[in-house]
Image (tube, rainbow, N blue to C red; front, side):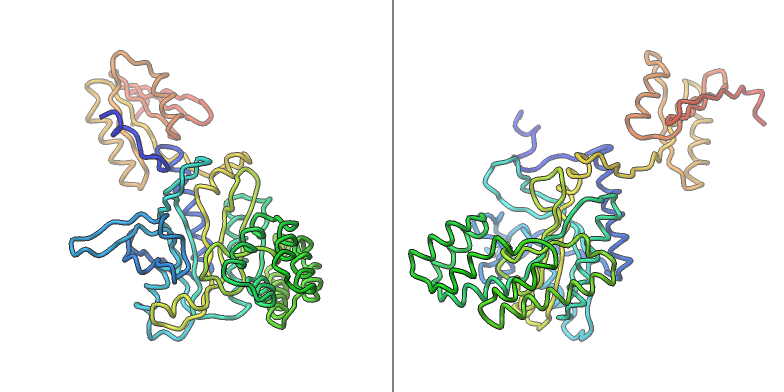
Length: 417
């Protein structure tokens, strides 16, 4: 029984003020999505296993929460929204030829090994722009993310941007086997560039390729590193990848958000379905990215519709951690008015509450216990973010307490009309 009173590892209850702040944060982000013309979509919490199969390029099967329906079909709790959105778009918008803008909020479930206190259920908000393969779409998605961060009060953050085709051009030029490629990717992800050189030496890769890989640790910074990246790229594919980044950067200048952009040409996408630009958002006070995203031009076609697309996801739990640690206030208005009443004053209290609610205002009714002081209810109101407390005494006298300023006003029953 004791075990049932606690949540499983990797999930937790969110309640009271924290829950209110989280919902307020989500509301502000959703407002930005809507201002950019994105429309809400809700997809199921669980899908057929095939939606997230290995060929799709999402997370490893061992990290999925899997179960079976009555017919024996394998189902999974969604670990990632993008394949679900791709599946829905291919089904619901099969005949649509113009770009589709969708946004969502919900939980994802990943069965991580238990370390570093990582959550297994995360709230994510995201946006997907489907049916547009242009650099304009790439820039819009980055601008949307930056404006979303600004809308919640975050000032110090950076979006690190790359293009997976750049790294792919290096790997293709090296003519690596699948096993060798996996090893190189692992070393690059861990930023072990010395290890990369050592490994390439051991498998006798040509000198020009080794030099290209060796320059990866220098291809991190502002727009000035893009020219160097073009000179490093061993093939036209790599050059075109960098030119795309240059084009996106010029468009971001029109949005006035270029100062939040950093380039890192060694960055590789977490998911295998990424095909073009990828990006991650970082700030102080959290160990992981608060934003992830990228272009996935061939994912939707796996569900039956050709549609070049790009998307982003904001990890709400990480964003809340960052805002809290940076002491950035999450706006959460004091909404409730507490109507406290003594024995025998229920009729008046309910009438006041009905009047408040009729005018669209929140009213919380509390009957005063004989063994509790008014001050205990005042503290309760402050703790639960109420704005005002109205106390109707047995005598008919009313005391009004402003829970923000502490100011009190008493109205005698003879003073009321």
